[in-house]
Image (cartoon, rainbow, N blue to C red; front, side, top):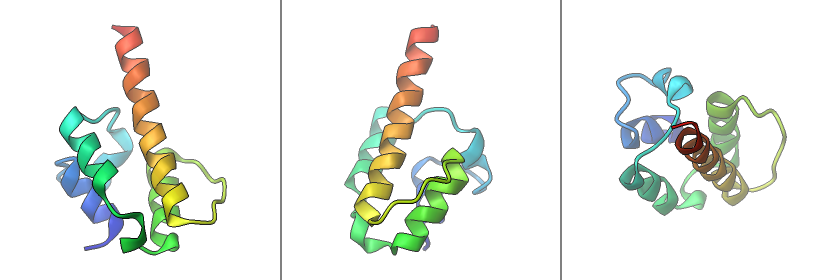
Length: 85
């Protein structure tokens, strides 16, 4: 299972394309994402996931950095959603 498929599974998305519209994660989903071992997936998979989900085209040089970008993305989305309510 590739990284995008794994993230879609964690987020209970029917399709990978559902990842783009997903605004936030619940606590359990965020915990699962946090527990993913960055080194399990190649840097290229993290780059693809970050670009696909966030639209961020910035480059990064490690799988751990890619994982942190995704975590930050969802944490910021969650904070924004809470402040809007």
